[in-house]
Length: 163
Length: 290
Image (cartoon, rainbow over all chains, first blue to last red; front, side, top):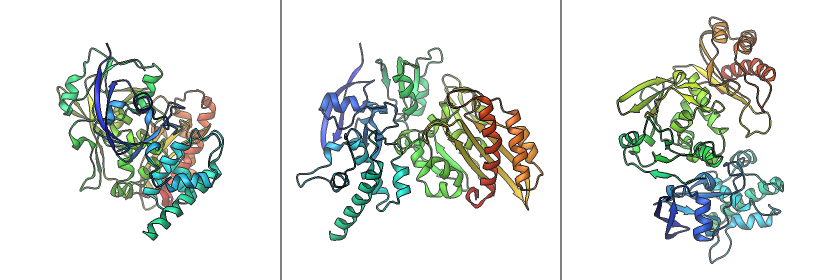
């Protein structure tokens, strides 16, 4: 019989428990236990970024991360980004720049952009390209994605300056 | 993936004791980025994984030593090395290599020890660490021993580690003015596994090469020092002619493998050109170490 266990972690700011098996991944955990489908498995090899989630603030590939390893950790997904006050400025920027076509990769790009702008508030186009090189958009909206990141960067800096 | 059991010991000693030298289906897992790929493709189907993530925190720490070398616990993330200002300042070749190693998410999770123990000849860090004359400390129930990086890799995905032995720590000596560089050639996309990796390290005094380390990886079954190229460089003046001669010597001597990333003759040409380029890169301002 597969070994099952209960893990406790913080999911988008809320304490949760889940019954899992040792071989489950974070993507399976989010989809099957919490019906969160924003992180999705595409390449399954950590190359495409569609499964991006944040664990203790760092971006990781949910398809290569065992669910057991988020026990006690803090997990943030795309579903936790918007607040009751509206969309996150990064989400707004992706919409305004038209930085997607089908949208399958978008949640991963947005989470990576959030982490990018935390580390580099005003990134150069080269920094954007290298930081997001592990995220693939099959619709090829890369020029718009780079514009969206720059727009998000200026929105964030403007809101910081106003605060 | 097929189901397996997971042990999560609190100490490194306990983790070592949970491995069974008679049972290859019981293996350690750290970051898991490489192991997960093997499990997902059913190349590896463990009965039990021993997670190293809960062991003493000193195995996750990274320090610049007072002598100017690096001491990194096996569980240190590649991203931790990348973000350590002292280390990337003292070892610009590591900064240069980590920047192009896989992607941000993998570097946030993959560990120094796992990167070495996996012994995938296409990885970027092993040839660089070999050129920097690094070593690891391996820990088993019978004690610990120091293994130079050159002796750690035994073949294609093979190490000289015993089945119940784990890498505990990586040591990189101070470079004392040596200069180094790494170049990788990918033939399909920038993020593809390389067809060739070249790492070099030179000790130069007054324009003359006193000592050279030239390492070729990816095109061969394991990161390999190219002795003929090193001999060609020793005593030579820093010059394009010397770099070309070293590239020629490495291209002739390397035991090159054909695969989907290129034929052996093609990769031999890559070696010829890129050994010379790596040597030029190391001796330009970009390769200057401390």
